[in-house]
Amino acid sequence: MPVENTADVNWLLSAITQSAAALIAIVGGLLVSRYVSLHAEQQGARRRADDLQRREVEAQAQLEQCLRDIDLYYVDDFLDDDVVFKSIIRQKGGATVDEVLADKDTDGGQLNLELLAEQLASLEGELVAASVVLRQEVIATKEHVGWVDFKRGKDFEVGHRGVWEWVYDRICDEKRRVAKREEDEARRKSQFGSLLGPTIDYSQFRFDNPQLRGIRSVVSSQHEIAHINVLRGRVETARAEVRALQQERRLAEELFEATRQPEGFGLALQVLATLAVLGMGVPVVIMAFVPYSLPVWLRAIVVVLFFLGVGLLLRFLFVYAHYLRGSRKSLPSRLVGLLTSDEA
Image (cartoon, rainbow, N blue to C red; front, side, top):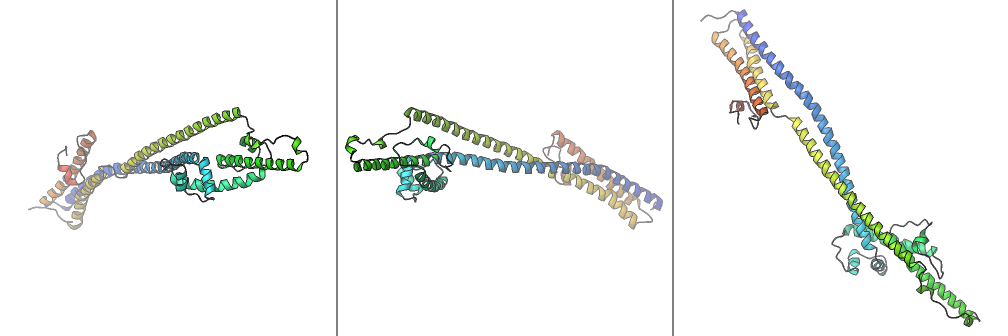
């Protein structure tokens, strides 16, 4: 069988190699360009997801603080009671949560017991501090102003208002009894005591205005209602912010995952690799190891392999077009999947 001359063979192999290289350069260039743009989108999505995660952590911490504020409000309201104060005094500063709950005849089911224990310990310390400070400040007299007027202008470190007011009232009662005893003692020592008339027990009287006290009670009640409404509003706002940030973060992470490995990129690389082997690898090997002549049947095989690679590339493009139109539910993961039905 005659063989073609070497120049014709090299021309044929070079033409096939150049054609395959051109196709790979065009399609590969498009893929590289898309990869670069996807990398930029991926970095932006990652930064967005990280920022949303950081904001979500901050919002969650804010929500926890708001919930703690509400729990603290109810715990303080529960502890602001004469029964609790007397229980602390009776136990000499060592009252436990169970003892306080038993004294108030409740199980504390709606309270944060851990926070209740913390506040109870703090309350015991403040009760002692208030007693020490107010015993020095309150003088022995038959008349005392109310707590609000008394503390005005004084630099007391009041943490729990109810404790200080309760201690103040008890100390005032004690000081009034002391003042009464001193007055009675002075009357007995006076030789004219019988002319002064009966002694009045001023400890039975309160020297603040009942109407004013009622007004203050109403104002305080309204203030407490407004305060708890504000706390609840903060909780709802914080919860809404957390939910919104969680949703945004999920969307950002989904976008990030989508940009990491877009569907079809792996298959495109397999197609290009196959085209490179069939259209470039085989001719180059033949030119290297068969320099003098090339049988017709071998030339035919080279041409068939080249067109097989081109056909595989075109098949991929058609299948990808069908996928984009919605005719296919997914793209195949391997080259053999390109030969299946478009509806696969």
